Picture 1 (cartoon, rainbow over the protein chains, first blue to last red):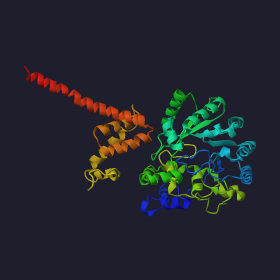
Picture 2: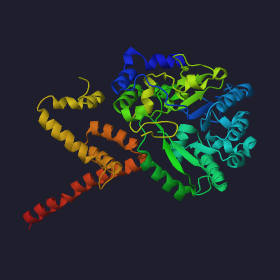
Picture 3: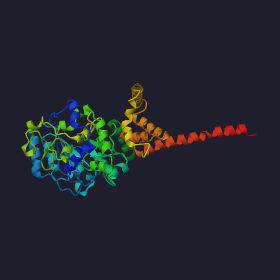
Picture 4: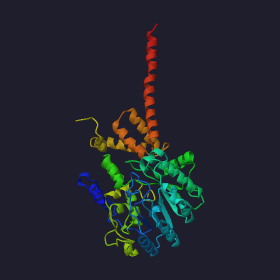
Length: 333
Length: 110
């Protein structure tokens, strides 16, 4: 539950230096938006996988899914802006009946579309034409693959997921994804399989490129490294394995002011499955909607009241400011 | 005291600088420079450190460099091979001293 997670993150017994105090010392408090460059739409928690680190707590049994009415409000808001990118996430966003409509509408409005894909969804019988659909609309696929070896990926994402992921990448490669000059971007996402921070992006990207090509004959464009956020299932894991305190210490010690000035919430507006607005997908999972006078629902969207809004921060924000920074597009500095 | 070694000690390593701070600072500067990217990558240096940590059997170093290797993107296969390298050198070092034993024996024997 979000309330319980916030209680742990703010617990005096487990106190770490206040994120807001650290921001203040970096001259960044209060943190404000620099403009909405990405509209991130979380269409719900339904997923065909149940990953151990999932910050959305998504799975096959979740029934929180965005309706057509809310999806239409998102597109109406988008039309009011010049926001160039629409980032569709979940859950497995493709399982939402509104997914394809959101893609076609966003493209009709001339926007770049990103699909945060778990790869295995491409192999579901109901999604046989998904790859061709994505390719047709030139949707950028951003796909999770925590490691290039099966044991590590399966440990985090479930037994057999690595093999399915490779099969899905092969399918995407067959459509041109990940291949030079095709215009079809396939970017992979690494996140640590445990309570440690990610390696330098360029170094692990070189490993992924070499190993995936040599072992499996598949290619991709870029690898994004993302830090695991101390919320939801990953927070449960940290607490259950007595790693919470050390992990938070690592995040706090690795605080980087340059990363703090580039956090993704500064150029993103995040919409929940029910239309509530957040500064990021992580605040969404902690039930921390936009505040400080900004409209809190997509139906009340007013660009000028959200474009330079003050951002809601908390202890979990250390996850985005550690080391080279972390956001939905990988490192930020 | 239940044990000579405590996990929490690692975070207090800096307390060694409370006395003779100028030597601590020299150590810190040198240590930092050693682990910077150079002719060897940071990841390779971290794997060497992990192997040496096992050779000198320092639990603090094993803890620190296990975490560091993971954070540098190494996997358990690579880290285990590094420990085998350290073990092989330790074992080989004992075995090669057998030549001293043989030399002494030869000198004493008719």
